[in-house]
Image (cartoon, rainbow, N blue to C red; front, side, top):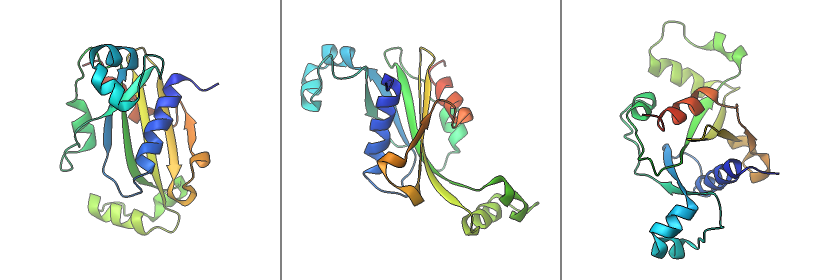
Length: 172
């Protein structure tokens, strides 16, 4: 059985995937659907929501500043108490551990990124990570080389440091 957090994360990941690849990071608030229906009935009706639709409704936020490092941007985010959770979707280039030897030892960040982008074993991955105030977290990974909904890997500990960073935005 799929948990409510996994369901909303899959919904967010599919929404972003529908727009294709090469997107900037996208941030979502998770609003309790019952509260949203009660407080914003016109919006809920326009979105096709009722109190039993889902536990949380994702609401996309303004884009993050592309010139600000992600860790700094996340550290500056605080949510009002009525936001139950948050989710972030971003794309990254990943390499297998064995590829580390091929990267420049003393290179600049730009040189390391360039070397990684040119490495034959690189993988482009979309990471979707959600956390809720009550303590749960969920992650989803989609590889560009396996860009199908049924190939998305989902688990609670796939990207633990990013999940912790998203969770920290809820405790500030």
